[in-house]
Amino acid sequence: MKAIRCLAILLVLALLVTGCTGRPADAPVDQTPEPTAERTVMVLAPEQRYRSIEYKIGLIMTAPNDLLHRVAQHGFLRTAENLEYRAKLYLGSDSSEADALVDQAIADGCVGLLVWANDAKLIAAAEKAKQAKIKTVIPFFNMGDADVDANLAADPADYAEEAVYIMVTTAQSRGRINGAVIIIGAQDAPDVAAALQNAVREQYPQYAVEVYQGYPPTDGMSTQEELADAFITQREDIAGIFCLAPGSGNIFADTCAAVEKRLKPAATPTPKSTPTPKKTTAPSLSPSPSEMPAETPAVPEIPSYKRNDCVIITLDCMQDNLNLVADGKITACIVRPFYDSTAQSTVVLDRLLRGIPTQTTVRLNAPVIRKSSVEKYQHIVREAADWFGVR
Image 1: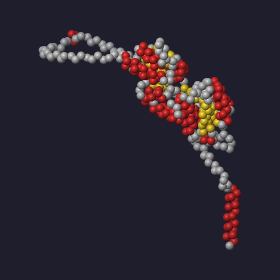
Image 2: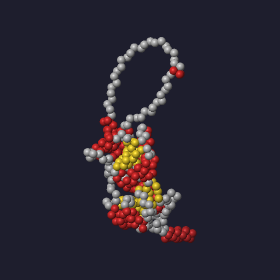
Image 3: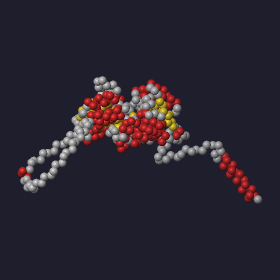
Image 4: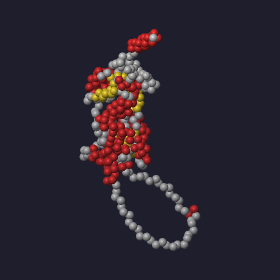
């Protein structure tokens, strides 16, 4: 009996000890995952482990909300989603709002920012964000010595060299071994126009370069279509056209085909010949080699100029440009990294927040895409258009 009583007392004491040291029923469970080799833990505060879903990052942009800039925003949002960040777009209509947008991001508790720094006010805003201890990355634009944590940009000289090579080699395969390379719409992308002009002059001096800020001026013509038609009709020396102005790729592709069809001479029917009866002649002896006429070397035939052979390369991943490449109406499109710059900058921002050593100045690629590689970019543009409801 005493043994049973002692056992009961021991059980009561054990329950009391467990109740005093155990977790209360309503206490939260610590579900913070242990660090793994793939996701390095960064201590933001002594008692708090880093989980990206708990923190907000943002993109500051005051550019027009056209499809190209929506593609850039899409690159940021899609990558932030994949990295499990809460992400916010801080958009303004003018760069004078940049300072206020940074203040808003600070008030929202952003730990990292991408700043679309296309002018001095936005550069200053990016530097202000860094001074506020926010990890700050500038995508797309080469910022040189701006005081930010990282900068990812493409060099126009890189993709201009590739684009000119594609244009010249394609033109030569069509018989255009010299002639003129035309740059349309330089005012829309002056850095790209300058890089293309330098690449042609340095690498292929046998080709002349003509740069037009807009469309080539032609007397008596007003619309873009009329200007293009008059220009293409008058010229028989064009090897290729870089269409930098939005929509110019469609206009010149259609114009070259239309002018060629209009100027093509009508085919003359060949008259039927009357068959003559065969004459039977006695076989003759073959002449000796000394009696045979000397062979005249063949002169290579120079192909006639066809305007629809003009090599056309456009700029930027707009839907009409990508469709032209996919349909084979133009040769290629230079895809400046609107999407890739923000997507890769978000990855770099993630590494900076985690304290992982990373390259802070990155030279991005701007591919010159052809028909075989256009589908990826069509998908990106379609998705961005659907997300934001723009075309």
